[in-house]
Length: 318
Image (cartoon, rainbow, N blue to C red; front, side, top):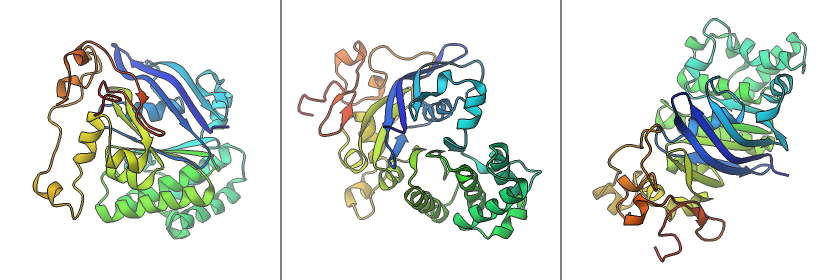
């Protein structure tokens, strides 16, 4: 059975902002799924929706099945039990996610105690073990968040996510604002822990190259929808949707003279969720758009073995 199934998920904020529009995803045990896209494409909203962490004014429709149970219909008590123990979230911006007036070991121990998994003393010992598991000395648990570096704080967030032994971890931009060397360390740490603990992982990032190197499969989002989904390396090397192709080409490949001397990007910005263009939402920025793209919306269709893309050109030899 799948660890996670998302079916026709739709999230609309107050004022008619359609942040997520009919997303379908599936994650099996031990699988690593990357979700990519520019800022404003709905990635973080998707992450928060998975554990019902959206603000009260958001309207959420569809189904989110975690081990067969629908998160959207769970009673509050059951939802509290599922958070951390069934699935946990590594928020972006560890400094803003940690409590500045509590020592980090106490913050790691708190969900363990609240879930009744250990006494306070045992939970503190477990917090030390978790810190060591993510590459920090147990003694660092006596530190306050401001006494740690950005990479160390991110490791604390990962330790906290592991505290109650979840089957699924959702990492929302876990390397934001970290330098390249620390970013690589954090990514290798997450990848190693997922393998070691036999966890499923959803990693969210704007960096398609990082996701292609870390994950098994990729889903590229644009204007609240998945526009392409498939095996990570195949999608990165040979994207079928023009947006996914532009996103991949925005990251120059080391040793590739063409990428070095002719860097490519994508002009413009994603559309306002409250004023989406008719037809395919990407067509105003698309270099291969047809007249029909401004009228007819596109849905995911087969784009090769284990791949899907929402483009009029898919299946037409392009």
